[in-house]
Length: 264
Image (cartoon, rainbow, N blue to C red; front, side, top):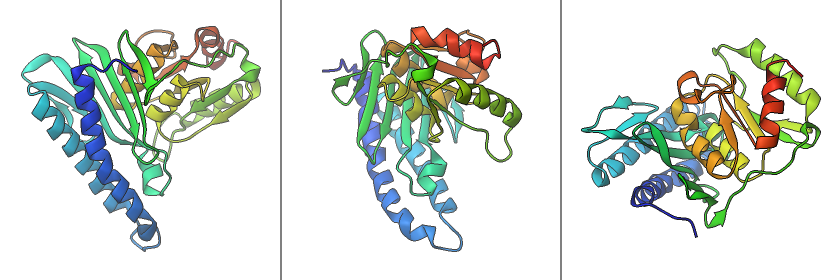
């Protein structure tokens, strides 16, 4: 059984409450897909409501904690040592199109260090949790990253810049290198779930550029507590600041770092 701190229990309860409404919303999307207007406004409302529920629930049980949230930005709290980092729907485009690959992502920082993490897909009821120093779990099953050591055997996940975003040419160069050296590449559209899947051994590695802290905070702790290595694309611990990330096991990390830098 996983060790669940009081804070992580609170995070789980908040995610499950918000997730129940998301499941109902997801069930309505099939009808909205055929409308002329489409589901965009509906999804925006669901996103905002989910964020509001999470902030309200966490504030009620942890008054004074600060927040960094996708829609509302930074919310200062009286307690300067604790901050929740939240993405209410990571994988919004998937959600909008009725694809059940999205998640609620919550991380807790204590004095600038990630200490608790949660990634929850309410449709599949997969609850990934991690506590610093106590491991990572999917529901009640302990997680370990995959043990493959050769690039030619691995499955790698990433995210691609979409319309209006910078970095397309850089991504295509990196993608060409990865496709040429590995067994396969996947682009599923939810960074937090990609990292959770890497922690569980479904993927062997994950890289992406230009992400926000709420995209990766929970996933970073999940991978590390599952025995993986997470850095930015310079091999440093600057992921939350620069938004660039590479996660893999210890045997693969340097190989992939060199590959993405064009040194292989």
